[in-house]
Amino acid sequence: MVRFTLRQCAYFRAVAQQGGIAQAARVLNISQPSVAQAIDKLEAVTGLVLFERHHARGLTLTQQGRLFLDHVARLDDHAAQVEREAMALAAETAGEIRLGVFWTLAPFHAAGLIRSFAEAEPGVVIRLHELSLVQLADGLREGSLDFAVTYDQGAPSDGLSFRPLAELRPMVVVAQDHPLAGRSSVDLSELALEPYVMFDAPGSRGYFEGLLAAGGISPPVVHASTSMESVRCAVAAGLGFTLLVMRPPSPVTYDGREVRTVPIRNDLPALRVVLAFRERRHVGRIAQRFSDHAAACFAARHHRDR
Image (cartoon, rainbow, N blue to C red; front, side):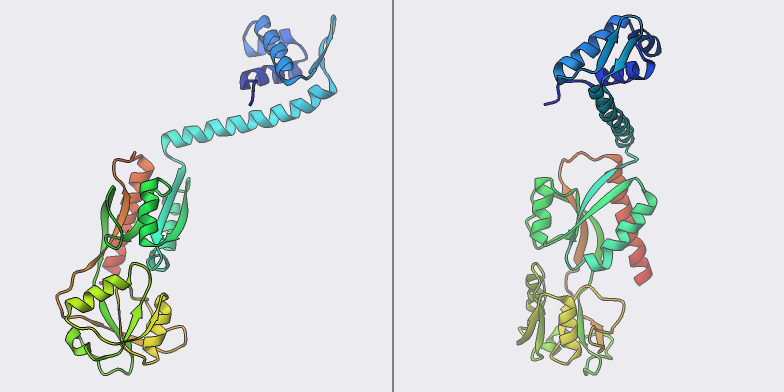
């Protein structure tokens, strides 16, 4: 445990630089006894002999004093830096945001959101965590995350608040040579006997199974994967159709084939993307600016994609 103070270290540094207690006292604009007592206390708690006392020539540093002075100088510089950073934090021009993003949303939104906010707020660092829906909700409640870009379903929402960011409409995805590839829309009943490629990522399977049930169909599952791109590759290879809400900008899959997306005519609920945060948390200016920035970014992207 540290038993000396920054003030004592500052007095010691002044004496070392000025060559005596009287000189340091004048520079510091305090009494000589205050400086002398600080030096005595510093030597007592550190067990060091910092100065050699000369009756006529004041004080000179011992070897221990010279070495300790180097440490004190670094400590003083660090303390000044801490003070500046504390002032920046108090003014909320600097800080950190611990951001969680759902796995399947991260490739589409995380990097752009982080970069654009860094350009607007260069003093704020964003720490990214890609997690499942349940992990995101738990992290917010436990306080290990400040915000999460996630869906408003798939995990318990107690203790959380949501700011809507976007609404995603599910779509059918088929190979480019599938008979439905050129259609303007499709009813799910038309796919009742079609083989189904399941996107089996945590939190996603239940949602898509619910959509199929809402459409009154239960197609045979021929392939399943937790990777969205593996699902698209399987569809492009002609194994079957799938349902997705996220659409990569290119129809080309990793293996060089292509898929086509077809809107669904059925009246199905949209999947909401939200910015989630813990209820009754302290909302500082940095947090509010990030929340507003995220909403603006999603709104701009929605406008571009229309």
